[in-house]
Length: 437
Image (cartoon, rainbow, N blue to C red; front, side, top):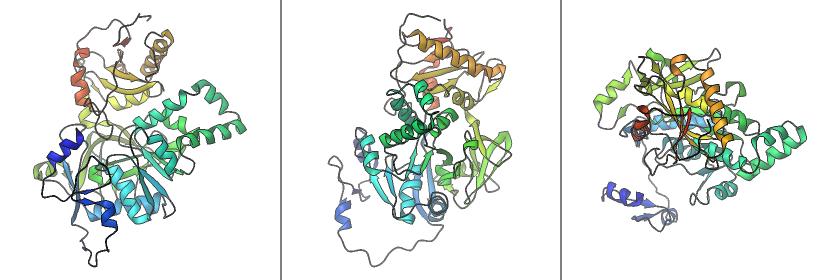
């Protein structure tokens, strides 16, 4: 279906260069072009010339076309490849996120131009793990959802209690960590990253104990990708997005909104002059993300300005920090906190598939998670219920973007009925079960 939509959406006069996939049609084949003689004359662009139009993910509305110049992308790519990640011609990268996504283009494809490293492309979702093992990437960047999947896969083979016990035994810990990294295809990986959405600090601590130090990063399509990162990795900075990279400046504005400027920041939205004008103040771009800054200069995302909602008590609630707290329970795979108009907010939760709603211990663990989370929240933030949903949120059911961010508006609209419903249990399973709590 996606290929059909692409065919309809791409104008016939636009030349298509295709990779060797049998279901895709185009005028030029990549391999055939490589076999031709190199061009004698190459186009010499000015730094301010548009290089590409990249579209936002559409997590909060209709995607916008971000016009990125050669200077925008070059400043971000050089900063990432040469100064932070230190890639070289000896290194390998794996490409698997959508090529339209700025993280994929900025931190994989573009950095390879400067570093000269090899890029491997995944064959399919079914071969993904095997493709990682075959590639043995030196840099591996992923989204929180996939790190959760990796963790779930490990925990299906060994319980977390046993794993944490073994990791406390020095020689066993070294052997076990190396084996797990090898099973994931990370024998050569020296830099790990997570971005595009918030990730639970507990997940990052969990992987760090396995010798997989994941540097959380932050950036936007409008900032040419990575603009802030915990790289070099600092375990004490887990829970932050790190410090700004050299090609941008950042500060906090009104409502603790993160403002950013610099050579990596775009100049305009495609054919949207009014939206562009509203997005800047004195050269500073309004990111829409709310943040805090530690004494050491590390930034922490505390939510989105537009994602705040007001309860019936008239109090504003920012969902992202609460969702991160719930992420400490490793069996929770997806979560979205809602509560517009309710006395107290509630959390919509998707569990790892192996969890059985009829198992009293699972419900008990969720109740404890709810109680522990509420102990860390102010009174107006405390959750009334955890609602455990039957089905995963996916790109196909329009509850995730192609880059696996949750579509908060669509999720809220789909499960709006829970905002008005009186629920019998603190932990409410959407599937039928014999309730124990």
